[in-house]
Every structure is written in C-alpha cells, then in structure tokens.
Amino acid sequence: MNKIGLDIGGTKTLGVVIGDDGSIVTSAQSPTRFGEDGVLETASALVETLLAAADISPSSLSSIGIGIPGHVDRAGGIVRNAVNIGVQRLDIARRLRARFGIEIGVDNDVTAAAIGTAHLMRLQGTIALLNLGTGLAAGIVRDGKPWRGSTGVAGEIGHFPVDPLGLDCPCGQRGCLETIASGSALRRAWPRGGDRPGRVLLSAIATGDAEAQRAFDQLAAGTAAAVRLLVLSLDPETIVIGGGLSRLGEPLRQAVRAQLGLSGAESQFLTGLHLAERVRLLPTDMPAAAVGAALVQIAD
Amino acid sequence: MNKIGLDIGGTKTLGVVIGDDGSIVTSAQSPTRFGEDGVLETASALVETLLAAADISPSSLSSIGIGIPGHVDRAGGIVRNAVNIGVQRLDIARRLRARFGIEIGVDNDVTAAAIGTAHLMRLQGTIALLNLGTGLAAGIVRDGKPWRGSTGVAGEIGHFPVDPLGLDCPCGQRGCLETIASGSALRRAWPRGGDRPGRVLLSAIATGDAEAQRAFDQLAAGTAAAVRLLVLSLDPETIVIGGGLSRLGEPLRQAVRAQLGLSGAESQFLTGLHLAERVRLLPTDMPAAAVGAALVQIAD
Image (cartoon, rainbow over all chains, first blue to last red):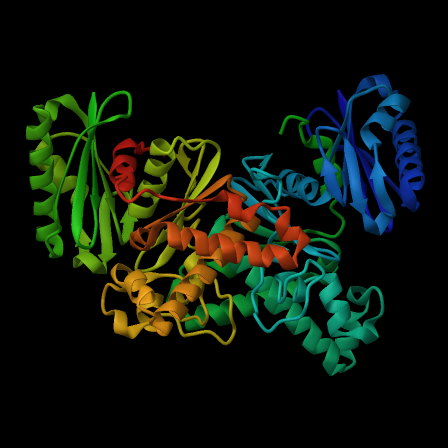
C-alpha cells in the first residue's frame, strides 16, 4: 500500500506519496498557512492534492505521516509550541484521522528528515542529520530506525555550551552551539542579511562584504564543532548537513571540512577520526523530511 | 559454564569468576606488574588463582574476558599504547589462549566497566558510565550491549573542547572537557595533592585548603558539563560516575548534582531534562569492569 508523508515547514509544506518499495510516486507542495487551523487546512488540502495527483483514494493508503517542528507528543499525535508556524497546541493526528479515516503518525521534523536522508541517500549504519535551521539539532538514525534516546532529546546538541564567554542563548544558558551555528546565530552575526540571511550570504561575500564573510566563517566553525561533538559522543559513519542553511551548499561543506582539517592539523587524535570525510550535504531537491515522515513506523 | 573476567588497571588487576546466571562466584586481585611480560604474567597468575579458588579447571570455562586500558584491537585481541601499564603492543589474546586453551576476549576497560555496571546495578535501557580516571571518557550500553559507534570512538567525550580559552590538552586541542574533569586535570589544578590527589582531596578540603576546594569545584562543574553533553547527544536514562575519582563518593555526586541544579535554575530547557536525577555513583566495591569483561560477547 502507499503512504503519504508531509513535511510541514515554516514557509512551505511538502508532501510525497511513497510506494511499497519506498520510492516516491508523486510529490507536491504548498505555502504553510499560519496557526492551528491554517496548518491543519494546509495539511488536509495537500493530502487531497497528492491523492488526486496519484489517482488514489484514502483507502489505498496505509498511513499518513507528519513531520513537524515544535514539541511532538508522538503517542498522542499532538504538537505543541511550534512557534514558527503559529501552533500552540494542535491535536493533528486525531483531526486528520477524522477526515481521512486512516492511521496518522506525527514526528519531529528533524527526526523525520534523518530517516528520509538515510533512506534516500542509501546510508547504512549510524547517521546523523545535522539540521541547520533557525536552531541547531541533529536527528539520529541507526540501521534505518530513529535513535530518540530515553526522553526524546537525543541529538539536541544545539544547547550544549562551548564557550563560557559566548552569547546568551534563549534557552537560558550562554555560548550554546546554537548561538554560533544556526539561522538565528547568522542573523545575529550579520544583521544586514535580514530575516533570511542564508539566501543572500554567498552573494554578499562575492561582492566583498567582510561582515558576511566573518558570519559565514563562524557558521562553518560552529558546524565543525557540532560534527566533532557528534563523532565523540555517537560516532556516526556519516553526518549529513541539512536544514535551510544547507542551501549554502558546497561552499559551506568545503568550509566545514576546512575547519575540521584545521583542527586535525593540531591534533593527531582528531586526524585519526577522519572527521572531514564523514561530512556530506543533503541535496536541496531531496524531500528527506516528507519521505522520512511517510516511512517512520509509529512504534519506532 | 563459568566465565572469567579480568580488569587490568594501572595499580591492580581484579578478577572474577562468573556463573551461568551472571552472579559472581569468586573474585581475587593482585598488583599489576609493569610492561608487556609483567601484564601477561599478572593476568595468567590471577586466572590460576581464580581457578584454584573456585576449584575448577580451564576446560569448565567458556571464555576469559580482559578489560584493559589503551587502544584495543578487539578482532585481533591486541592491546597498544597502554601507557599506564607500560604496554606498547601486547598480543594478549593469542598468548593467553596458548596458555589456557580457551577463547579470550579483549575489550576497552571503560566499555567493560559500562557493561558490568548495567549488569550489576540492574540498569535498563541506555546507560553511560562516565569514567573519571586519569582521563575522561564514557562507556555506553544499550539494552545490555555496548554501543561502540562506527569506529569505536563513541563516548570519547573527554576530547570535546568546551572553552576556547581553556588549557592545552595533550591531544593537541585546547579546553577539552578532560582538562577540567579528570585525574590529570585535578593534578594540574591542585599540584599540592601529589600524584593521586583524589585520595587526599576531601581531607584537605576538610582542613580548609582553599585550593583543594577550588579544584574539587572545577571537577564537579566539568563532570556536570559531561553529563549535559551525554544527555544532549545520547540521552541515556542513567549516567553512572565511575573510575578512580568516583572514590570521592557522595560528596562528588552531590556537588555534580548541585552544579546541574544551578544550570537548571537559569534554564527551563535544562530543568525539563532532569539531569541531576539521572546521575548515580558506581559503588567502590563493585568490580564492574571485571564483570563486564567476563560478560561481553566477542561479537558485540
């Protein structure tokens, strides 16, 4: 049977229909409407669009999976505090089930992206999806299954402090990795870049904007620190850079690898970890979170 | 069938005979002799002592497991660069197999301690043994099995830098967690404590030694940082403080919990992680590494 997966993001919602063999049958997207009712209506309409595009009925689906930011209660199918999309509390699984009559799974968008990344990039073993979004977090997958940890915070490395003299973090600590490597850190480091600095950063650097260059260098250094942290704790085979800032593409990956090479040059120990070789980039056209949302088992 | 496990440490080697049900049949210890031949002779003699004490022959053993510091090649049964015990390269599995005629497993001592800790303290799910020895590292066990990572460095959190202005680390980096929370860090912070400062630290504090107090506070703060790092990456149910410095006992655990409470007070996010509640102490009389060395499967 087919499955549908939705990746509900801050600006757009992306949906896919997945066949039995895990391949993408069809995909579609639409702008995400704000607030509980807006998000629900966006999701419902996109499911209808996907059903029509694939020419199937809800009864031919085994499940619909939702990847969504915020705090996800997977057992209850409830999303809380998804600030970017204006959701305080949304009983999304129950309400979509009422409409489509099939099983609905809800999961954290970063976890969904990690599952989809492992599947689409055919990565074996343990992989970490390092999500450079507004914040910084990693989704971890081992042999195709999500590693959530005992309380669901595994991979929340953005809130580990790495500099006692660093910037204040909204979490209440100081010098968290997220204050160095994330979309919000980039906005702070380069105010001229506006609300979506990732989209204009490389062109600003190309025109000689020194502040943009410094902000980019900081992002690369912080991302390299996140890679080191992931390897020294979880030791994944592969770390895939994803999230909105992964659109910085090959220049970002090269800068991160250069930072990792730099630290390796000072440390034989780090050289032996082959950090730079583990870093890959999520292709921008790969709907990892939507596919992962479709694939994740509700029991996982 | 019975198994024997040996924990080869810098000063002493501890051995246990384990019954089919995982209980300790008998145990014995002896000082560790220095160098390749010394270590091999220490291990062989201790196995003989254990066989005699349990009144069994080698043929009634299914295996002998060795937990040892240094770089362990598990497949080859070879130990390299175990500086504390004077071993450059020791083909320990082959040589003990030649002597006793049974299967010999060799594993990292911290991993062995983590396996033994989970078993002896009856801890379920994911646990991390935070080993405060000369260095700082964690052994990770999930559902009774070691989590080694893809290249065996999972849990090597001691070499993650947490302070750009911190002390130089022998690994070539600066401000590593190990420069704050470890036996070597304690020696550096409190030179008056001599070579084994952990043994006299609490009594020095009791007599009002302010430098000893500062060194203790730094150790507790660094250990708390290690706990945060483990939870934000791996999210284990339980973090057990082990290693030589765990002899600081309840005062250390209380100080670490106080540090974790302190950081929680500034951060609602951290409060929700219940960090302090996850921290336990390995009882000093518990032969965790020897039992873990006996229990670990060669295929694990």
